Structure formats: C-alpha cells, structure tokens
Length: 216
Ligand code: TMP
Image (cartoon, rainbow, N blue to C red; front, side):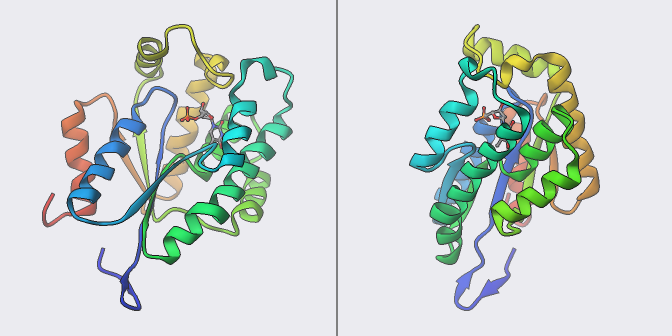
C-alpha cells in the first residue's frame, strides 16, 4: 500500500461488484468514510453513469421500455458510458493522486453480458480493452451472496420497481453470480471476495483489513 509515484502516493482504483441486491453500494459508502477519516482524497463513480453523458446512457440501458435492445447494443452502450467516465473522471482523478471508488467496472460487462447473456468473453475483453485503453482496477471487491438473498433485499428496497436488467430474473442472476466467481478465480490477486450474507460490520472490518492491515 505504500507505492509511490513521484511525491504523490499512488492513488488506488477500487471497483465494487456483485449481483443486484448484494449490498455493494453500502460497503462502498464504508470505504468512502474510511478514506475521509484518513484524509485521503477520493472520487466516487457509478456505472453505467458517472458523467452527464453516461447518466443519459444509463437511463436508456435500465429503462424497462427499452426491451427491444439487442445484446450487442447493450454491450456497446455500457462500454460507451465507461469510456466517457474514464476520460472525464477516472483518469484525471488518478493523475492527481485521487483514489477512485467505482460502483461496477469492466467485470460487470464480463459477468452480465458474458456469463449472463452468453457473449464470448474473449470478444468482450477485446472491446473493453479498446473502450478503456486497458485500464483495470487495482482491487475489485466482489460481494458474493445467494441469489435468493439478493433478490429478497432488492424486493425490500424497490418493491416491484425493477430496472431492465433486474427484470431478467433468477436464472440470469445465478449465471452472473457464477460468472463473477469464475472471474475472481482467474485473478485471485485483484479480487477480494466478501460474503455479503454476513453482518455489515463484519464485512466492513474485512474490507478495512485489506486496505489498512496494520490499523484496520
Ligand atoms: P447498478 O444497479 O449496480 O447501478 O447497475 C446497473 C445495472 O446494470 C445492474 O443490473 C448491472 C448492470 N450492468 C451490466 O449489465 N453490465 C455492465 O457493464 C454494468 C456496469 C452494469
């Protein structure tokens, strides 16, 4: 954690992933509070979205009325939002030594469009490489839990107000979950898998221990 680039401590790029309803945004709030307490500058972004163009793309992507959207259009729209976010927010922040906390990044495309929709992973990786210039997070926190638990949480939070992706249902979410676990298995150094079915305080403690092992 003490790498340096010139005089600036190297900013970390941390993404949070998991199936819908896993609770990643709540955990992201916790890491943000830890950074504030330690006077470490950060920006927080979400995908799709995070820029004014990206937020418009988000509306199209998540609108249940856009049910006729093709899978290829979906991949490209997520990638378009990401390209915009990197150029407008993520890259400038990292150049200034500011941490970036991202609510989803490329792994979401691999898990949802690759494992969920069945697009070939190698092709998606090529597209992502082009869209992102090869940027990948330093650390990816995967909040993992049963699909049943996540859907129950989602139901409590949103009632019947589901977006286009959440409406894909249980079998889809199951493929996405297994996809995330497979991705994490391929890159154990980058991924930190946390059990989202455990109490929040316990999970938050594991997260702190990852970033500040001496002083969690
Ligand atoms: P959110 O609900 O976590 O903000 O994410 C929006 C939805 O978009 C969520 O269902 C996951 C989905 N998604 C993809 O399918 N592919 C992607 O590349 C991203 C970033 C999100």
